[in-house]
Length: 373
Image 1 (cartoon, helix red, strand yellow):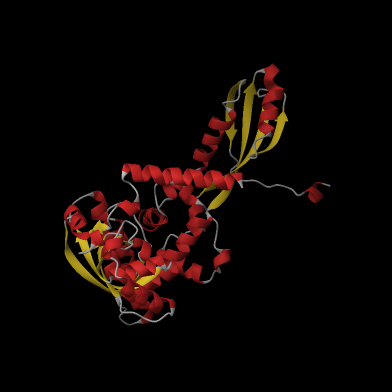
Image 2: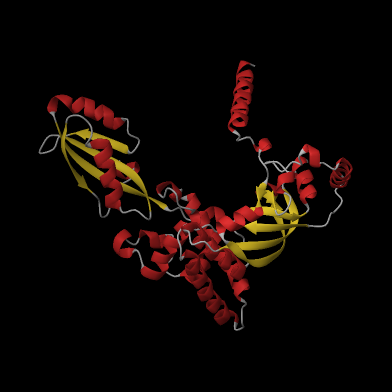
């Protein structure tokens, strides 16, 4: 109860501060289309037709932005109560209404016709609304706008959903080349012409989506801060299918991602999704350590607390401690890179460690216990 009261107090205090600073959506007008159009220099248009639009993406109006607040609620002195109540009754009964008309600039939408329908739909908690959309393309040459224009052109040409999000210019063009190559493959296999959009849909279903599933299963994005899964797809596929990663990463990645795009498609078609291969592999390494004699026991205790350490042996000879570690690496990293980072950050930093040597087995033959007995 006390926690709930505290949250309520903090929430009210935060709302009051926003009002004081003029940052409360209730005190702001809805966004002006014309102001954003001038800011983005968005004057070229394309008709996107009829689509379902998320209501939370509708942020303003073309001609009546001053009649609505920042949450797209009608301001008191502009309310037509009878009209709003009639619209609410129709929507509550599930009856169909004509699609609204929206202008789009990047990921934001502005109402050209249907302001009250949008306001009522938002009030009733609807998630989407049916709309005719005209998109205004930003011409201002910022990096964001360049990538956005490339994305818009790619989506229009392919008819694919806008879930493919890339953060570098030129990458959408690369995906377009992949689709064109896949189209040629389909034409050869089917012995007939294949429309580009049909080829794009097949590429998305049989190549791109399975590849993304493998990326997500391997949690690879953790190592690529600020990048998207589509960025990683473009990076891996470019180097695997166009340039080849063998020189830098070895052949391990070939076990998961074939060196040929259509070969990858064929293998995936024969595999159930939950059997998709993992993008991780285990590495075994043996670390030979020289340590200060009086600190040997404490070092061994510290090492035993590391989950990657599987065996520790105090030994006689030119080294003092022998450690077996089992690490995991994704197939975009090298063995040496992963082992080197672990040894440097987890082992050499321990007080009393004088030096280390690393042995990486090239081949192993481990006997089971019953074989030994």
